Length: 224
Image 1 (cartoon, rainbow, N blue to C red):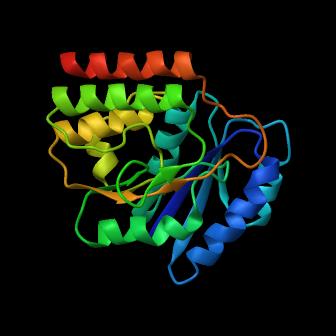
Image 2: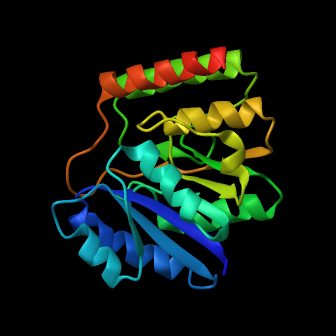
Image 3: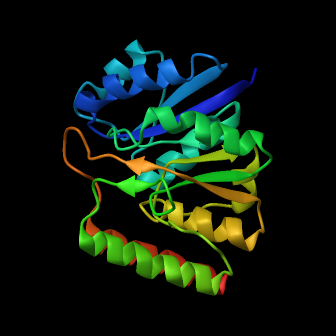
């Protein structure tokens, strides 16, 4: 039986963040028929135990963020499917904005830190410049009009991701989604989002390593 909203959250050793996140998500989604799917990368701490306590459905995937997101969204039963990070950088009170984007008839609704009303409290200059560089490449090469590229707070209409044939296993997943959505001429809308600083634990992003992955994802999709 389907749900109206599915929230998919990849996790890896997020025991200090996951309880606060799930508590706030459940409060925001209380008016909806919803499910929360935690896709865990075999955490060594109490992440899974805590997530179960809050009613999340647990799936395991140890290949990377992209693989976890694909697996979670494939398992999602909701008409509206939302990808969300576990580190409290995505504000649960923006969930209804992402839901409204799909309810308005769009295929994909993307949070943006760089449109009016958006912001980031956790992006050093090097990452800002890298994002702008890759953003300009994608907009030019694929005739897109995005204001943000490497941000994972997004919502999707059920069935849309199957059409994208996603392959990226790691941190290039958001870039791959953006490129293939543009190539497939999907109905896309951006909404403002404020990225908060990670509350606890170490960031998983590695600027140069993941920047190379994003570049490889862009160049690989030119040839496809």
